[in-house]
Length: 486
Image 1 (spheres, rainbow, N blue to C red):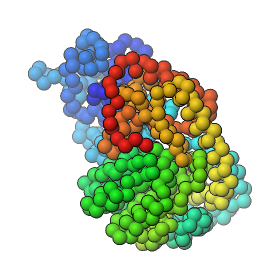
Image 2 (image 1 turned 90 degrees about the vertical axis):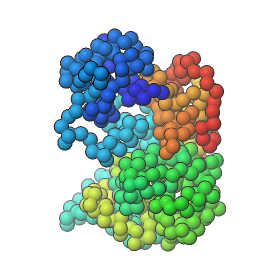
Image 3 (image 1 turned 120 degrees about the vertical axis):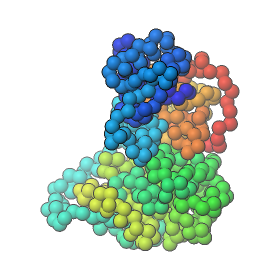
């Protein structure tokens, strides 16, 4: 897809003359800092050809932008976005964040409407009933005690840290309270790792594909991402060792119900990764946020179970199992590293909300019960989605995940980013596989969450099938080898 098609997106979705819609899309891109002040716009004929409109439409759009003070044209220099005052321009970090949001449809959809009827974007479930019951109990029974004191707890509420430590012990990882740091969800935990370990230009090892939020977080911190392929049984451990041995500052892995593929790293490979952490003393971040969402058998213990004192930092969260609105996550690791991370946590926000932590302390012991209920729920939704795909999109292929909330689907041909643009016109939003790749690979994959109710999933698949038929009619390119098949 051409650059300006990506920048402007589905610019013809609104009402009014085409030139007005095009001018509005350019203004919106400037507001988002997708187009920088001073940037030169394409020649009228070039943009017309790229967008598939008449040159008159582009000429009229540029004229409106000039009249409204957004662009300026000079003889021999073309048309450029007018420069604002230097202090109003985006900083280098903001430009990194803007770039992340441009490619990360999931995060962007949390902030702005994508104008769609159905969205296959976020992988999150509605709140478990236990969350509301716990919240009511906290207000009814604990309010007086909770409101005593200053409420600033950078490491987290003590009884929640104890409950988290006990949960790790249950999973086979010896843990005490001092090894736990409570965070505002797993995303903040990932960001704290970046703050502690990453310097601009430093290599950070990630899987390919991987969680898109980790790509954005480490890229925004200035890391140089080094990718290691994921196969049908998880990360390639030999390639992982080689990548870490080339001076990596840290490695980020998702061994259990990998995001987005759903694969599980076997126990022998986990033992090998644990030995690697012990021998090389390079921090390995183990994202365990999906570990309670099985649609099959139980996974092996966390990597940290095989080297409890090694620099292995295990991230957990209540967001997937219980509810994302609690914003309660944690990091388990060696006490010295936890204390260093706590300093960054204190500077960031002085500590997570005490009320949410009190609710979390009540619901965490209920995890086994909620886990059984979630398994029934997501298995039903996964079965429904795959049945609909087989019926309406029979050429699409996938491997059934071991768990998690995502189906990693391969297209028979074409480019998922291009398909995503067509899908928007049919009222459905999808995430192209390239968003999950640090190298922009997996262009022929689509990431489909199975979290909505059956009626919404059915509507979305039917819309997606109509979009695919329209897109397929315009492309006849053969399937290329764009990554490891999982």
